[in-house]
Image (tube, rainbow, N blue to C red; front, side, top):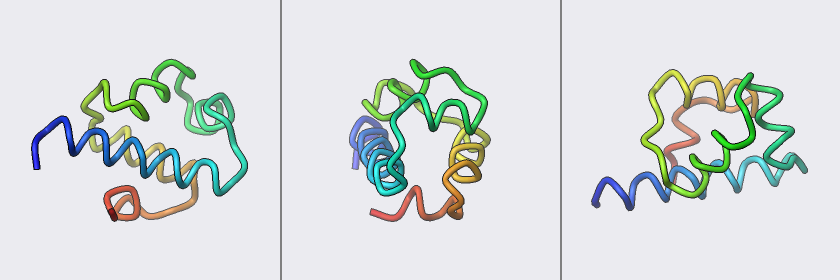
Length: 71
């Protein structure tokens, strides 16, 4: 798997978990203290998220970090 493929898979997983909660990007951004554009870039695979960013997102979504990487 390439780096770009991995970033896209993580982004798709965040989208999946976010939409299961009925949240839009702004809702998730607010819950994890980020701006909406940061969430958009992550979901579109445009950025390589840090482990801490993944932790913040998983905490906001109330899932374990490994669930963001489960695909």
